[in-house]
Image 1 (spheres, rainbow, N blue to C red):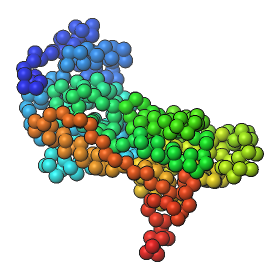
Image 2 (image 1 turned 90 degrees about the vertical axis):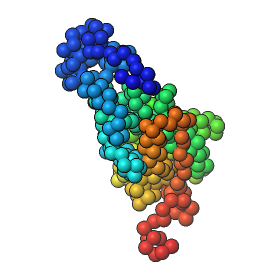
Image 3 (image 1 turned 45 degrees about the horizontal axis):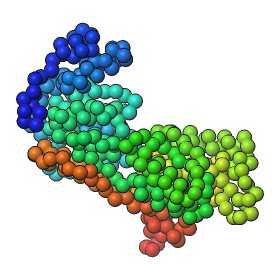
Image 4 (image 1 turned 180 degrees about the horizontal axis):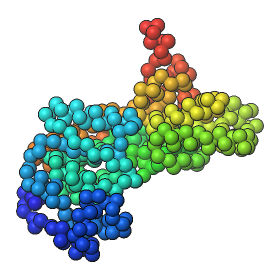
Length: 375
């Protein structure tokens, strides 16, 4: 095996088995089909492999051939518009460079080092995108034998990192809601360390603190449609069981002209559009006035956000550009470039009606009737 041009002793399956305290057959099964191995044993095998920097035989043979002329990508899934756009941007840039792309999908709850290491043996470089079944230790291990980049995930030494700007935009978004008179703001999304949603949550909390406000509620959920529907159901259930809990100070809110709220909230900052769109759809179907009772914002500026009624206030990120930059950088690393400082792509606040803005004051795509009128 070659690392940075220097020959290193190649670890063997026997060494992995000895360190893990298992047979070589068990090591082989762990990398071939880990479902046939007890979780504790599997983890011991993978930990031993990481410590020894062991690569399964098939991948190791491929590593001996320096050029496969392909780029590898590890993604959690491609079900939502964000990941699909990220991958499309990456693939278009790779195609322009004459490089095919090989994809592995590994959801966050899946621990799939075998699939990642197998991919490692078939490509010249690897891109790890967002939170997936490949943890930072796997990313670090891969970076020691192949050029590696990461997108929208925590920084790993020796890996080129790409991010969209999140923290300051989240501050601006929260400040905008506060400017509309919203004082009981909740956050929807799982703010994992180093993740995009983690940075958005941090900016949100900083804006609240600067305004002398405390977080009203945090829904710690995955950024998917089904989770948004569940959050909406929780809000409706609270409002139905105890209408007065729509706001502990209902009379004060009504007399001052402030939004009455629902379930103790008058605004929700969602970690992405997928959550926000599901919440708005369910609440409006139940008769909740968005944004009259509850302002809702998203993130990503998906196509649906532009045509929803009320139009969704969100944050636009050049996601395809982020993917393209990562592909070009990975190709440059394969050609011998050194690791560079993290690259951060700007984000833009897009104001529409769901935050409380009037239709005349929005900054996003005009409504369909305005487009048809040529306005």
